[in-house]
Image 1 (cartoon, rainbow, N blue to C red):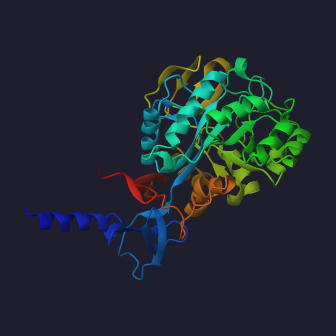
Image 2 (tube, rainbow, N blue to C red):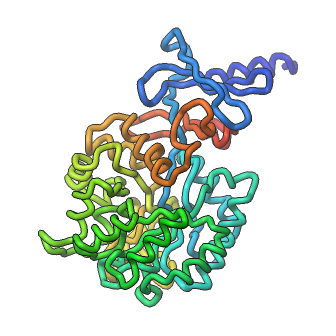
Image 3 (spheres, rainbow, N blue to C red):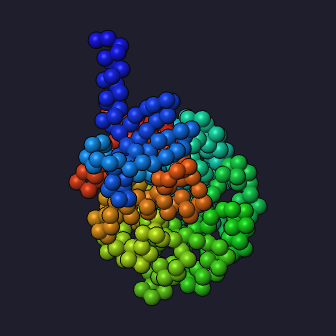
Length: 406
């Protein structure tokens, strides 16, 4: 077979996959997730330079085209624990590449409550990874979940009580310095001493504040939102198994229009009725999907020791049997797409909005989460098979980083 014939075959294959190249620029073609029409995106210097509608429907790709998924709460993946003792840039690389396969083009590595020295060390490693030319564009910042959360059993979830404390601004500044000012999101409990002043400081320095793992009263929650908090972390989780039916943290967060909740719609962390109720109140514009995946996600089911805790990984979730609570998810955020569509009967447009557009807007990631001229070309080509999102291609800044056919 001669070289010319090989080249023709390669070009033909790329076209069939919704990818083409001309004059040093690339083009990605697919069925636009938001309206079902075929489009072709021209990409130059990592950005979408133009969008053209295709005149003849059915002539190009049969794959949906959408902005890459953005997971703002992920504790680890495929054996890589962002809070673990063995974190390295190379391990962050491993996790990032695995997430590309799941359609995640941007994510906030999440460090949870642990020893201060460990947290500082790991944030420093994440800051190095953020500068890495291969994976850095997929890491716009970091999420600190704790240690300023409720110490009460149930509300603290799987966080270790011995490391939980009241908000400490000087300590947080140490963490932020180690992270090279990369902490963009923090989850805390509003009822703790000093929390409201701490929230004001965070907001003043550009850090988004989310309320989570807390037992705050309606008054605590209102005061926190007045101070600038604007998100609720995995609403309906990080909560005691038994709560007062009237006075609990869920209703005030659900009823305040200023709060955007994140939810783990993996089919196991929340019931169908909870997800539907949350969605009916907040809608697609004020809901964010997160995975809350642990490093155990993608590993074989069984018992594992993580962070001084004995965890049980099932095929669906990660459990902390000792306290009868869930410890995290076992699926990437792409698994939430089909579930939220099934539970709420929303369309693919709304599902992608909640998993990409909304988190980008909440964190002011101006060039992400949308398909538009001048936006970074973080894209996914996918199919819905049996109501599951199957990723075929993932692009980060216009570069093909994953192909199902390779």
